[in-house]
Image (cartoon, rainbow, N blue to C red; front, side):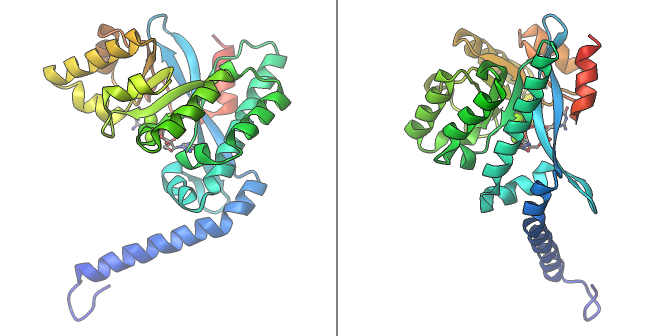
Length: 277
Ligand code: C2E
Ligand code: MG
Ligand code: MG
Ligand code: MG
């Protein structure tokens, strides 16, 4: 708005902030009803096995289908839900939807490929987390080995021992553990040694910044080799170009996910995709 003949950057900033606060209030006000009304829906993004050029499974990514606003990105509401702890409910709902999907595929005789589910730090810390997961997989008769839990890299820097114990317990139950967004934080290679992860997911930004110069390529190649020597799988995230695929194959990175292959899609679309191959 123009005040006194000029637009102060301060006013502009306040307006932005005010808009953001209003949006956050709107989201918080509507979240419970949205859950009850089934407005949170799960999309799936395929992961590809580069060695055999076939599907390796998929990642479950939540969207909010708001009747007024349409599809809302998780980047908008996840940080809010992490602040007010609604994320625990949402993560469990996504986990449950994935179990229902897997159990349906098993019943239909479709060879089910593993699905990964993002788990927030807040959810992981919740007292009844393990109990809830166990109850859900028992109820839907889904083998835990079909489910991979993706934890963001920053998680592993807090309460090291506590997190390690939970991860070990999850692994005992048969779940796979993936460290998501690897390379975005202050990842040290110790993380790989200390945490019982089965998979590391190389972050898109990390891959882009490193795959452009020779030194960066060496860093990534060594990391992939180290992960493999430690018996971990490596998934490259956010792969968009043929050049990236060539590079990944060259350094023996086995699995890739990104717009180059497919964007996250509705479950029915993913189903027909895997049925057609
Ligand atoms: P993430 O787990 O690292 O997921 C990857 C994100 O990158 C997804 O964004 C995906 O759509 C996007 N992506 C995939 N391939 C490409 C590509 O080739 N290019 C580009 N530019 N982007 C690509 P999305 O779906 O918006 O999700 C954002 C983040 O929200 C996720 O990052 C994850 O941290 C979080 N999230 C999503 N669903 C859940 C959930 O159910 N629970 C929790 N706790 N977090 C979730
Ligand atoms: Mg993820
Ligand atoms: Mg990621
Ligand atoms: Mg992320």
